[in-house]
Length: 125
Image (cartoon, rainbow, N blue to C red; front, side, top):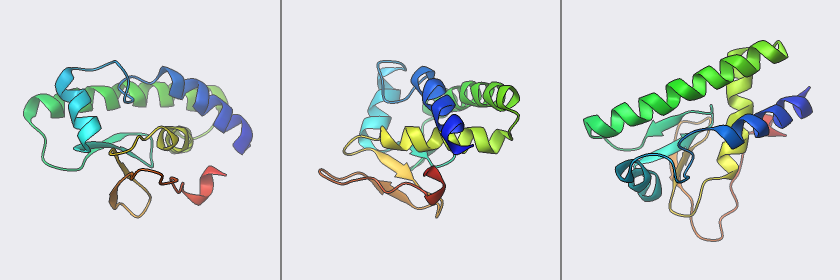
């Protein structure tokens, strides 16, 4: 079951908006690159530090779009929303770049260091 969830997560992950790509405002991209906003283990973005109102709105909008994609994936695959989002979170954690923030299940924010291999949650396989 994990294999098809991960394959589906990869497909959804490739289409996710705002994943340290060319999408989003310059302020959003700067917040991702500087570690003010980071990827969470559950497939959503989170705030490492207090955001501006504009940044908060942008991240909330990205998370709303992600939730819609996860809901669609969960419905198609007959799994829970949490299963779909956390499976996609596994893929997104692999994309965290040097200097970017990420959160694992212990809910502690970390910043990826040069040469650091990311440790994924055990359920990622």
